[in-house]
Length: 61
Image (tube, rainbow, N blue to C red; front, top):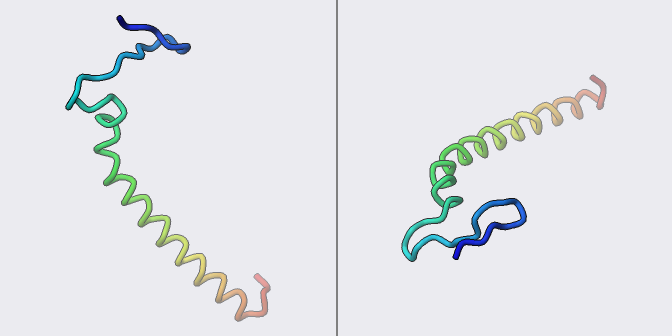
C-alpha cells in the first residue's frame, strides 16, 4: 500500500537495486559541483592576493 506523506508525495520505497529519485537526480551533479568548487577556490586565491597587496600598501584602498 502506498501512503502519501505530509507533502502529498508517495512514501513508497524503490525496489531493491533500483536507485531512488534523489540518487538519479544528483548523479550528474558531481561534475558541476567539482567545477564550481574549483571556481570558488580560484576566487579565494585571487582574494588572498588582493588582500596581501592591500596590506602591503598599508591597508588603504
